[in-house]
Image 1 (tube, rainbow, N blue to C red):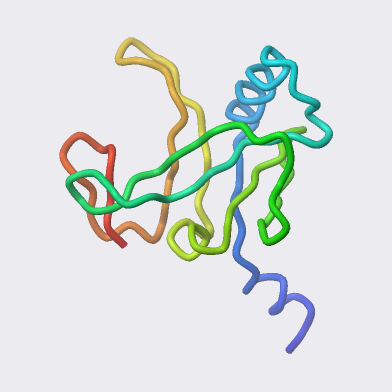
Image 2 (image 1 turned 180 degrees about the vertical axis):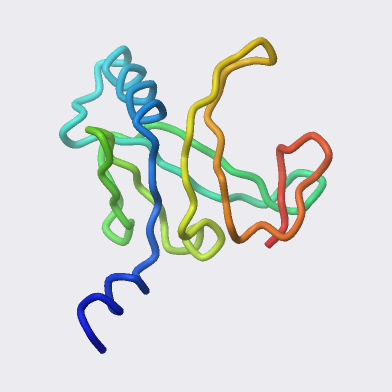
Length: 120
């Protein structure tokens, strides 16, 4: 297998610059060391479609986490969650309907009407 083919097969999480800036600002506001701490992105059972995204700040990654760094933000993903969200994009959207982080997941087969849960 060529190096390019191997690199393409590695699961990944991308983060927009806007999402990274927002999350990094929140981390700093909570006095986290952004060189070590990061945003944990995970999938949990729940919601009307079966699965939902979760996010929280962690002081440091777990031993088996995948770690992604984009625009100064570290993102931690556990192996069980990775199988549902690999190749996703984390974005931050603002607006009149409310601001927040949003996961653009190419693995989603269907989402619930409110957009809070999904099925792969």
